[in-house]
Image 1 (cartoon, one colour):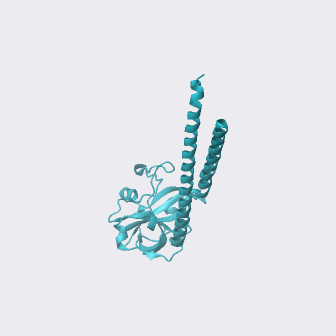
Image 2 (cartoon, rainbow, N blue to C red):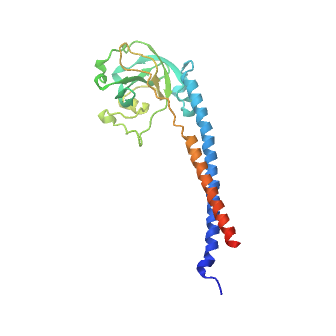
Image 3 (cartoon, one colour):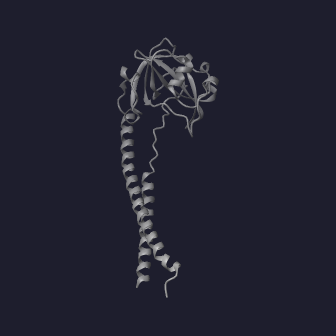
Amino acid sequence: MSESPRATARPVIRWALLVFLIAATVGFIALGVWQVERLQWKRDLIARVDARVHATPAQLPASSFRSALDPAEDEYRRVAATGRLLHTQEVAVYATTERGPGYWIMTPLVTADGTVWINRGYVDNAHRARETRARHDESETVSVIGLLRVPEQHGVFLRANVPDEDRWYTRAPAEFSSARNVDGTTAAFFIDAQDRIDTGNWPVPGLTMVQFRNNHLSYALTWFGMALLGLLATEFVLRSEFRRKR
């Protein structure tokens, strides 16, 4: 008496399931190994950035105003710049900080090599207007020490700027220069001031958040856990098949 089609199909299904489990387990292991590699990369990145933030500030070279920025090598580098702050052309960018909601005060600094936008610091809503804050005159030369930052991009977490309505949500030097008609060469980056520049209490500098999400270890453990489950399921299927044959 021949086997029914259903009985004939069962071994095929079991072996297909076995192949799937082995492939999935190998994939889970590969993903876990990849996350371990990413963990080491992230730790190295954090160490490099921490060293940059606390390094002796380097003077901005003239070439930096005309060359592209390499975020991996340059962002959060501690730099120094000297020039004149054009307060009448400043931009207030909406910000959420440890002090609460408010604004970053972005001001162009005219140097001998070009213009670089400076994030002078945070102000609350009561000090958003330029007239409410004490500051250096535009004819005075000031020195700025801060962290070099790449322009922000609008997307899921940041709204696009609306220059025509003077509403700003991302720190984008090129957009600032266009809206404020800043002459000359403008650097593709901006600088977060670490020390107070102005003569009064506002803006408040030094609020740069140097943080990197580092969840790679938990991701790696998750993938390796899935691989372990895959191995246990594979063992169960193999034992079932051997018992059936016996």
